[in-house]
Amino acid sequence: MAWREWPLVAFTLLGQLATGFYLFFVVPVMFVGRPAQGSEGRNAILYATAAVIGMLGVAAAASFFHLGRPLKAPNALSNLRTSWLSREILFELLFLISLAGLFVLVWLGRGEGVPAKAAAGLAGSFGILFLVSMARLYMVPGVPAWNRAATPVSFFLATMTLGSLGALAVSEVISGAYQIEEGTLLPGPSWLRALTVFAAALVALGVVGYVLLTSNHGVLRSRAAASLKPAVASPAVFFVLRFVLLAGCGLALLAAFRSGLGGGAGTRGGANLVLIAFGLAAVSELLARFEFYGLGDGRRSF
Image (cartoon, rainbow, N blue to C red):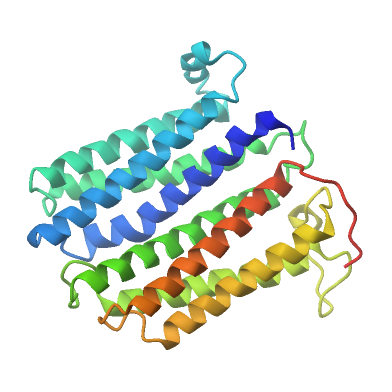
C-alpha cells in the first residue's frame, strides 16, 4: 500500500468508529437513559461527545495529508450536486456542528430538554449520511475493486462492530465506577447484556462472512455473490490473522458475558475482556482496510 493511502485508512476507520460509538452509546444514553441526572450522567455524555468530536477532528486532519493541494480543500464543497466527496465533507461538518450543539446544551445543564434531544437526533442522522457518502464515494466505475457491494457492507459492518464494542467497553467501565440502576445514568444492565449479544452476533457474522467471501470454493454448498467478494486476493497470512483476531474477539465477548457483564456489578474482569475484544476487532478492521487499499496481491487456495 502506498504511503499516500495511510491518511485514508485513518480517516475511514476513525470516522466509522466515531459514528458507531455515537450511535451505540450517546444516542441510547440521550433517549433511554437520563444523562442529566447527577454529575456522573452529565460528565459521561460530555466526555463521550467530546471523544466523538475528537475522533472526527483527527480523521478530518488526516484526510488533508491525502490532498495534493491542502490549501484548496474548501473547494471540495463546491460540487454538492454530483460529487459524493463534497457530500461526505458536508455531512461530516454538519455532524460536527450538531455534536458541538449537543455538547454545549449538556454542559449548560439542559441535557434532558427538547433542544438537546433534537441536536442528538440530528447528529445521528448526519452521522449515518456521512457513512453513506463515504461508502458511495468509493463506488466509482473507474476502480472495479471498490465498485461492488462489498464496499458499503464492509464499511457499515466495521461501524457497527467497532461502535458497539466501544460503547460496551465504555459502559462497562462506567458501570464499574457507579452502581447503575435500570433507567438512570445508562439504559441499564439489560442494555449492556443486549449490546454484548449484538456485538457477539456481529463478530460471528464477520467470521462466517469472511470465510465465505474470501473462499474460492463454496462453503457448506454456499457461494457468495461475486459483488461481495474482494476483487484482489491478499496474502494468505492476512486471512489467517483476521480469522484468529475475529475468533479471539468472539471468545472474549463470550467469556465477558459468562462473567456476568451487564449485571450491574461492573466487574474488572468483564471490563478487561470487553477491552480485549475491542482491541482485537480494531486490529482486524485495520488489516481489512489494508486489504481494501490493496496491500499485497498474494493468491489463496482456500
